[in-house]
Length: 305
Image (cartoon, rainbow, N blue to C red):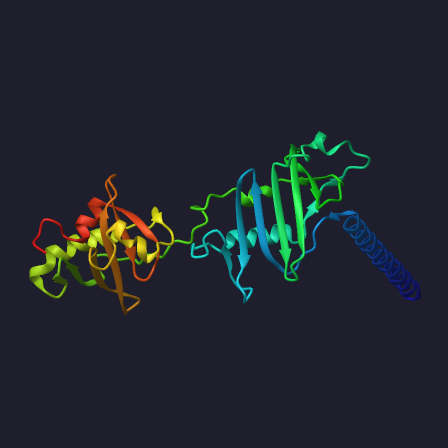
């Protein structure tokens, strides 16, 4: 019995030593990993550190775009047309990309700037912080899925990834278009059409309007707000689309959504000469292009208005 107890004590001692060794190894590994992570972080090179960016200017040749935050620092606007409905994810991506820009490497004892295309940069990005301080990045020739880069007038040459991609969007792609409701014969309650001083109403509760309601609901349900002729139309320009108050056709559609009654207002203007009509919705300043066929269905064309 004493022998078995002695063996048990020895085993427990060995186990304790193993556990202590394992703990020590884990501690050493963790500290080694932390040291390596810290060393890697210290070796990274950042050429910008702008936490309060207020303005971004992108220039490519003679083309350029400027984005600036509003006074409340909440919204980015497109400065060439402040009324343009700018989708915020685009300037936000630009801000996130350039506020702390990491470069791949710094060229030591490099050649003349002309060797890297930096004497005549392909792209130029100017970043402004809240104090008005500007940082300008110049992008030269392409290299390793990125570009050669200099910052301000330092003449130091870096290589950087293809961060210019965040600017490779057309203005049309960056537009925040209006949301359009789901409307069909199942939830359309009433449609009222006003044109040429007269008014026509189709009511889903009127059995005589059943066919007309189905037709106009089909038209309303087929609308896709995907193509625009003007993203921020001025009042003075409404007449050229026949969307001024005296020329336009007004369609008021009453529909239900989540057991709540809503109203959609469509303003239909003239033909664009390519099989579409100019259309606006509610209080939006965007002029959309909707096919004549869909507009005819919305207006129940062929019937007396």
